[in-house]
Length: 102
Length: 136
Length: 130
Image 1 (cartoon, helix red, strand yellow):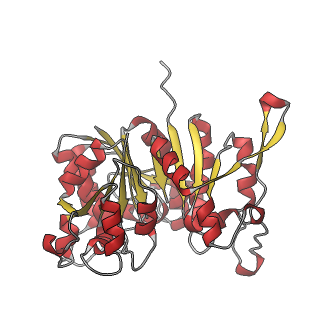
Image 2: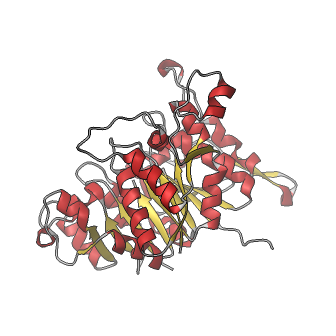
């Protein structure tokens, strides 16, 4: 019974993304929303963190938050998937619980 | 028809006084205690600072709410999980935390510790076993 | 699926209220039920009717109020958090001897028990905050 983890802050501002990845179990998913989407850009300081996380769980970015911030799907680290709010709802429904890392 | 109890996990990751989250999280726990669900509190990242012994707020003019954690036993809240790695990263050990106990009615009201040190992997499992995770 | 939603921040300063609103709309569009939206911490500030946001930007309070009206969604502002921050309905204003109230339509003030009840009754709780 897996968990959807949400991360809403940039890892450059706050440690919540790193903490979230530190608490993920097999089968969980991490969805970055709001400023959290900055954390899944390709390259940069957190590229390795994201790559390691992708080996254990699915990682998503919320499309509308990317677009708002001038980011495109091709700017993201490989393996990160983009979903809309409808996908967010689906993820929340398909996992047993949602854990917000604020 | 009695509904099955749900496992509530209150996630505390923020230090006290700099923001209100630790205090208002505790207020939810106190009210929530009346609903007879399974309750556990998680303290990780800067949330471990919520439980530090010897908080003295006189100089900052704010209410010292730390003693309320000690009263949690009276509200049947007995599971305070503190993350070991979060303590170590901050140069802390369990000795720096307030002694928080509950009275076990099954053992002649013997005092038992409410604080349980868990490592990160165990904390992840605790999250994964909860029904409702409330973050503040 | 029945969703419970918690909003921990006030309008505009943080994106939390916007994100929650968009999530709720998407959930409704998919045929899910929103059991309750519970406003806590500064989230209670979403429930004042006295905001005058710039005309060329969204009016968060109106959007929440309209959602409540159109889809019969229960928007609850926590009384303890509201008292701290000055969000009152007529009853509270009278009870506390204040000369005004400011709660927005569609919102109601109630206790933290409503949050716990949402956790118990909903299938999923989703928290939006800072």
